[in-house]
Length: 363
Length: 250
Picture 1 (tube, rainbow over the protein chains, first blue to last red):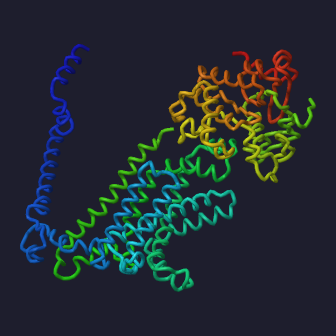
Picture 2 (picture 1 turned 90 degrees about the horizontal axis):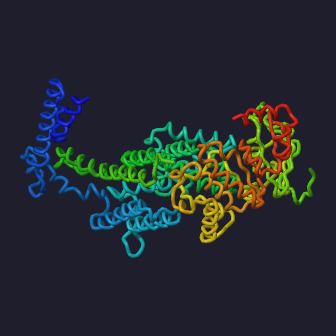
Picture 3 (picture 1 turned 135 degrees about the vertical axis):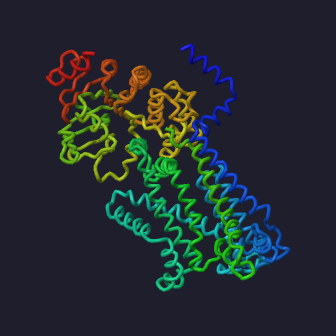
């Protein structure tokens, strides 16, 4: 007893960080060797990366592609030369400010809707209707003296952000309706809905987008077709809704049956029980998978490339694909990856914040 | 006992209820007058909870008639919410809404169902919270309260709808022993104020103190129905005697 306490005293006398290091990485000879090898590997890779990305890299496009060919490092010059193409696609050059403003508006609206002040159905709806309307007017033009730009010319980051937010905005209410119908007490409705959900989930997103863009015009009457962009967004929304509906249903099923009984006993109507008791708790329960679904959906917007849209990924392909800069595709993809990362990572962090605020996992 | 229809809160006539092939209620007859306090007891699985859950149609019966405040509960009923708002219910597991504060739990239904203004609803809610002796917990979430406090909030929540009848479904069974008294105190207070109460409970002290009648159920039937004085001292049925000897032995 006295011996152990003596040792304890000696242990605490040393710096804690040193103890932690020794115990974690150098507990035995094998551990020490592996730790050392790992450290050497990390340093080597880190140095290589730094060498490529910074030390020997070319940052300015002043020297043209030739300057890059001579340098051994990364050719960031292509980003300098072609960033407008990547961010704005085919949108007319002199109107890029409109595309940029439109993109900022949507991102600002998204950030604003993360603030608890706006967490009222009416406020959120007003915010998003105003945001989407400003986006449309800025991008499409034809109003307030803005030069019209057809949807076919929209592109780059604004298009990505628009397809994502419009898809989720249409898809989320659809998902709620799907989930409620799937839980309907009438077997006809419940079975039909589960068939629809399963059918949509069995199809690859590419097929749905292709159908929306290319096949639907043959089937739908002219007045119902709308622009290809809106058909594709609807396809996106449908795909999102099928998955999100199941996530919401899972969230609903995790609610103890006593909740609905208590709400019934108080005389609450079906819609009040759904909107005040069931859905708020279902969304809390289903928050982690919902955030995942958002992140997945954001990244899947790049698939619209196959139906001929120049969202940020397709614009990136175009940026290096024109001969002179053909060799610099890695740099372009790194840049695009950083853009995706910024959005997806922010979404995830916001999800983590929400979990704290909404006290997920507590009663 | 016969009462004038207008004074009748609840009337069950040869009510039968099945879960699949399981016969949960067998020809149950019961009449409760306004202002009466009924305690329902019996072994588990005897149909006590099923019976009171039929009174606000959380469960549907298959035959017989149930009349609550003059309205018959059947498949034709267009607006069950109108009956439910007059019939408060307190559950064994409290069933407070965990995503709302205590105050919001209390004001939700009065605002949505009774169309009360926020100010009115909050004033009433604070009055009832004071009555159940926890006004200081108004801004907390249910998960931050003890079981006894949660059950008192649940009682206050039901009272905020100003119901004519209160149903209690084993309100103290999920509580730690030291919290049972605080909930029973609230219930005794309510009984003294003349509330019509139907309580499923094994708290025989409570039954002795406030019940007008004790109803004993077994196997889905009402076996015995008597004022507490007779019920506890000279029960007529053998099953009642056995049940009483079991629960009063401790």
